[in-house]
Length: 85
Image 1 (cartoon, rainbow, N blue to C red):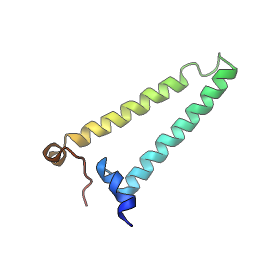
Image 2: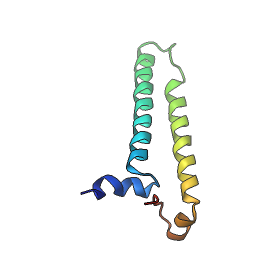
Image 3: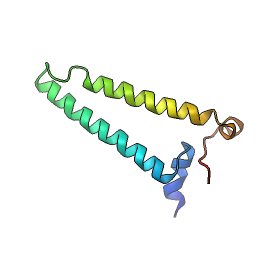
């Protein structure tokens, strides 16, 4: 049963705790950006770039971390990112 909680995080080079922290921080930022987008829909003069800036920032963060993990010797040898056990 443990593998249900560790298999996916290992494929992205994270422990369960690291993955949970990253997912929560992404989720919170997306929720806040979503609220800003909802307000922007009603009041176009508010939060004009908040949603798109959040998406750009999160994308850059995800790709930067993925690229660092993919350049590890293990990832280069196997083509797969694995967390250290």
